Length: 268
Length: 114
Image (cartoon, rainbow over all chains, first blue to last red; front, side):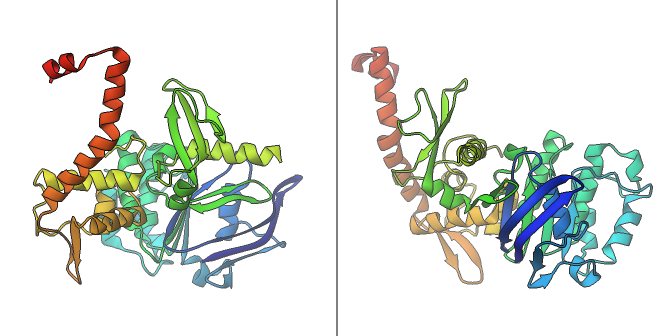
């Protein structure tokens, strides 16, 4: 479990997180959502000690996160832009995997093959999408209990996105905590079982997908039902979110949920 | 596999699994993929897939053999057809009738078309 308490962070002159408290529990794939600049990437960097702060604490499995192998061996973070060093993928993996006791070399080879990436190639000779595929394969093969992915589908081509979903679903187990931050919600929505929406100061929503679907009804119709909480007009009709009165679940529409929660927050 | 309907993912997965049984791809009394295997097959979170299996279990379509995994129950095909028929009568048929009425298609015309 990750416990975040009263976390503050600012870049020189730019406050980012202000008094953020929340928890991330194991056995879940979180969708971490928030408008640009609310500090999602900053939060990731703080959770894996790439950034530090004097104000507030982050504990992983009850221990304060710090730059020590015993702590960092449980965590892997895939940033949005991964350039990679000027060496072959296999050499990079050999180096990095030293720090991760659960690393699975066979799994790495299989995932790279699925992604059609040759481990002998250098990162510097690969496109963004290829680098992303290589680092995602490595991230999964390291088998850390905590995995943070920042915009993982950015740069991936269409077949790679489907592969990515299948790999993530296969990698999930009750011990792991996976957090995916993205604006491309359609790419990952089938993977998520928990949604967390942040703004700079607070957690606006922290709910499982099944609870969200039991609480709200999502739909599209010529006219949005009376009492809709938020409506967006479009080609196929009005996409709406309203209270779920029937008790029947409809498929969560993350975009509409996100827009509704953010609007509600701003109106406060 | 692409999901696009308005049904929640776990129910769409139930539909998919029911189809596999009715089509004979999964035979009665045969072992089916585990929750994790199914999740990996369709790219869906295993926690979501668990809900599909739970529903199929309460519908007496699949059952769990301790330590061996999930199996298709005998008589599952007939039960699925019964469930889908009820859904068709309560959901799709009224929509179909409403649309025919809106377009002014008579019962006789419909019978001819069918």
